[in-house]
Length: 597
Image (tube, rainbow, N blue to C red):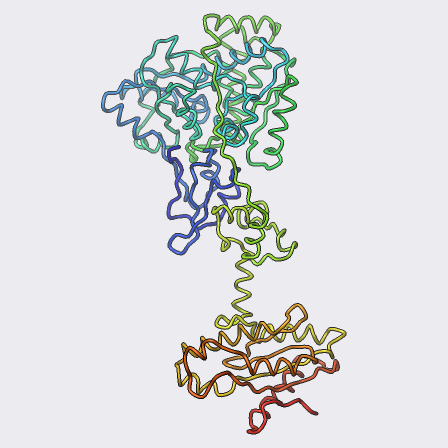
């Protein structure tokens, strides 16, 4: 697929586009200039346009055929324009002026696509009447079709094989009006592109020009200076198609309520709706139930590519009421006379299309299935560990800040390369906590964590099982003088790593960095002598590598405080161990001293 939606440098990586997108992997978070930047993965995107609507930073933009249309028209290409009926709803005051302007610049023919909606109504009625037990999903919304073909191909048999209204019109003007001009679709939707490019639609439409880009291109034109009307008259009720339930109202007007027609919009942004879509196709559609499924909340009237500066829900409601009143009270055709029996209305309506061949409006759908990669559990677990999510509780925080519905979805996204662990708020919190509580050189917990852990030990009923040591690597200043601070840091880091291996942290035993080459230790009392010996005999590769004179291994001095359980607080322990440490440091013939009251 061509690239239609892009991300510009306004993106701040807020993840709103991820949270609103119904397709995992359609948005990829990456680093750009050291900032989080979310780009569109067009291979997965269904062009629903939701990210265009929700982005508050104007970071998403799209391309269409507006420039190509005007350039080709200016170069003398013979073009006809089909205008989506939502255009006349959103821009009622200038619609005919726009038609007049288009004629003035060389457009050959102009068609209101509501006539295609009327054909679509007729085609669906014929389809219903041919099989009384049939059911299915009405395929008028290209976004819904895109989604099903790409992600739920098992539902394809439930799609009613009839062209969407714009392609019903395209077939009609090609075959029945013999219009051979290239056809331009003026539309509120970017999702038409896959439909236009699909082999099943036979290049019937050549350009997709969106309302928004059309008006940006012609922002300086005074449309009030022009006037024209469509080259084809519709049968009124097709003008309601852009509204939610528009087709349902059309069909029920002619065939009554013998068929159950359910209209739902939007359907792609709710996980529960998506989960039930397959069930709908497998069960309800075989029972004579039809679904009119739309992507946009207010139907095509609020498509993602309308001119948002002019959109007003109040105006849409007003136009809806106006159109319905005009049709049902002052309709051009008797088939809309509600006083007539439905069978009479239906006969009158069908007679309008008696010369059409239903097969001309038949469409095939094909699987474009993108099979998702199932991430193995062990890979998910590895990602969780990297994200510092080692407990079940931490793996179900599900805060949604990353844009996904759950921590598990985020882990899957990281595993698939759609996101990075730095985009997890909890990971960042843990990383910041580590920066605050762990020494970056040695990787050891710092004094803050020592005090916190010591407090927990003192509060435990078995606190008198523990002892605290303050230790110091002797003559480390001499090492720094011999090899320099950088190599000295390497030695210190190796000492810390090997010393840490001596402690069972699951049993509240740890070594902490106090500062420089000074450390705290919390350990069970019975292990103190063994630990002191092993800390004095650590074999360090860096010492051998740097060949420091007269030093084959590091030796330590230590002060020991045995916890009694009666200490009122951590300050008491720290004061006592510090006093003992400074005492042993002043002694020349001792490297180990126990606190004694």
